[in-house]
Amino acid sequence: MSNEEYWNPVLETLPREKLEKLQLKKFQEIFTWAYDRSKFYHKLYSDAGIEPGDIKSFEDIRRVPKIEKSMMRDIQGKDPFPYGDILCVPLEEVTDYRQTSGTTGQPVYQADTWQDWEFSTEAYAYALYAQGYRPGDRLFVPFGYNIFIAFWAYHYAGQKIGCEMIPGGVLNTEARILKMQELRATGMGATPTYVLGMAETARRMGINPPTDLQIRKITVAGEPGGSIPATRKRMEEAWGAKVYDQVGSTEIGHWGWECQHQSGLHVNEGFFLVEIIDVDTGECINEPGRRGKMVVTTFTRSAQPCIRFDVKDLIEWNSQLCDCGRTYRLLDGGIKGRADDITKVKGVLLSPTAIEEVVRAIPELSNEYLVVVTKKGDIDVITLKVEIVPEHAKDEAAVRTVLVDQLRVKTNLGYNIEFHEFGSLPRSMAKSRRFQDERPKQH
Amino acid sequence: MAEEYDIKALAEIIKSLRRDTEKLKEIGAGMPTVVKNADRILSNVKMLEINVNDVVKILGK
Image (cartoon, rainbow over all chains, first blue to last red; front, side, top):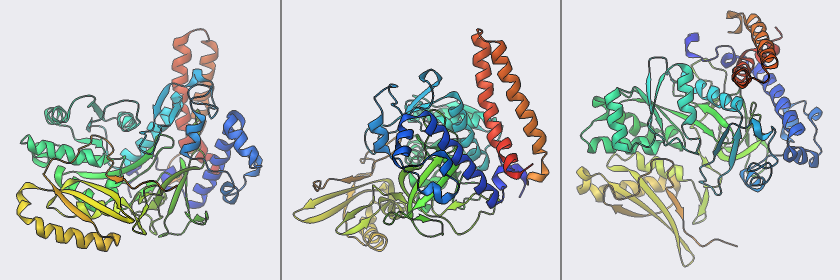
């Protein structure tokens, strides 16, 4: 493999035993940093009876208490305002405020120093470089540049690599498409939902993205679609472009990405420690093919460190290393869903990702769908709302049969299927919420 | 792949960049333009350190 494929040819190909030694050392450093500077972390670790000198192996790391979003929510709003005592630097050193999208509740505030922001950008640069972005690319960013992290780092990582960045900002979808066409943009970053929505809008405007636009690389993030084969196929066909998945979060940073080989998500193990934990037993999973929830540590985040953060995303290791030559491990199939989202319906565990796989594999259906779970008496009822594309309106009965069969195979559940007029289901410019559980809460 | 690059030499230069920039901050104290631009340089130096110097230490070079 040519060295020109790597942002850092030394770190990305480091032998596994060296890489693990590096991870242990970096964990010790960030643990000590947080223990010495943050009242929150100091108390958390003191209560657990763990001090910096106690961490000598990965087994010791497993004893370090995990943190989760709800703890962050409890901390914030207090002094040092608004971040609370998780903060490890004086407020005067904080240069950036951002917050989580609030998909799972009250948004979490994130403080960054300028160095932290450089780190976010650096981690994202690994992704974009691996995906083939180079100087000479002109990248369009159809994102609102606001308090959410979303594609901020895509912008600055592209700039760092040497690409020319076009901020799509507050333009509406039509204006963004016209600007992409006018400036002959060659790549973009957006959520899968918006990538598909933009293609739909472009076609309505009489613009066929594969032939009338020059977008050839798309990085998607924010939803699992980039690693769902049927959704990726739709995006690639709609744009005539290669689509690459990228994962990260406000609290962690940009910890994983696909390279040009599209073999799965690489974990940036030089910058992050990703552990997979068995949901039931709490045991650490190192073997491929066993799903568990992800716990992540960011090695270089000085203002608001992220140490053993229980993300609740479900992932599993791939048994193969990628042909690209990187020694960073791959996740099989990206994010498989969220532990929070996987809910019992009719006594069966249901993952919304499985429904997306079915819907997006049926070409007669539009990109949009909505799943609503209600209760009639004691019985759970799942309603799947879909749109049939106008040219296939006559095929509704056949599509219904395929849909019901495939959903039964993939999820082991029966559904009420509702066909809605094309274009009538809600469209989102960011993360979509396609799963609505309207059952009364159990107490 | 580490052997294809003189990462030890790179690490030495990065160390001197940190020393020089910290000196710049010290001498330029009271001149916000010097201090704040030096801070930004140090952030980039940190990125070089995590990409190069930390690896050099692990490789025992």
